[in-house]
Image 1 (cartoon, rainbow, N blue to C red):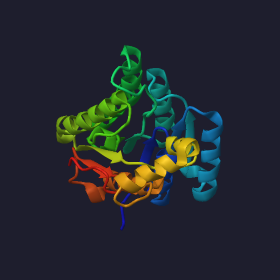
Image 2 (cartoon, rainbow, N blue to C red; image 1 turned 120 degrees about the horizontal axis):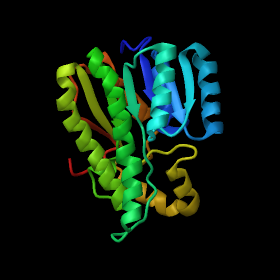
Image 3 (cartoon, one colour; image 1 turned 180 degrees about the vertical axis):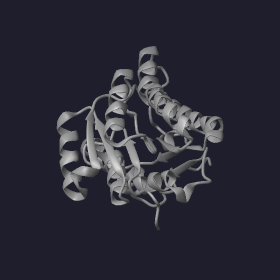
Image 4 (cartoon, rainbow, N blue to C red; image 1 turned 30 degrees about the horizontal axis):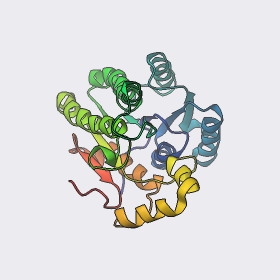
Length: 258
């Protein structure tokens, strides 16, 4: 399918590995110009080298930093604008599933999780929308989680934050639709990749994790980053031009409440 993403200017936060990196590769395969970001210098450098070798250095740029911080957001958007001009697509892939388990996690744990999984992404989206609304063009996709729509053993603060991301994206979409902007979210299930949380869980308690996947996921396997990336890229494309305010759950059928 032709997605009309050639030469589109794309920024993907959290894209040195996992879902973000797979999303960068999928956009690059469509001919987009992609800025990848990350906090880990070595991982980001490896990702840039790999993607540039595959798609050309003229189509990929790496910007190091924490895109939940206003100063970093400003620096990165400035670099993107200087090299490639206004953004066409933003993929806000920000978050961490780490957190205190149980119902009595404490105020600090809640504040940390909300800051990482909700506030940081909102801050990034808000800054990007300043330019997109002026041009009356653009797409935003926020990476949430199936924990935001389904009861799971995940930390309560993480699940609540991802539910808020989904609600934020839906309500934001109504506010910016008159500016010809679209906002959607994607809710991945259990995605396995190198350096990710499920790789760690498998190393620590392999048999228990595999039993959980077998019993809870109808497709009886982990998801692949590429399977999430394909949905994100489609939602960002002109082929999804009438799709806004929605959440696409990509979890192998695990979610039962929707």
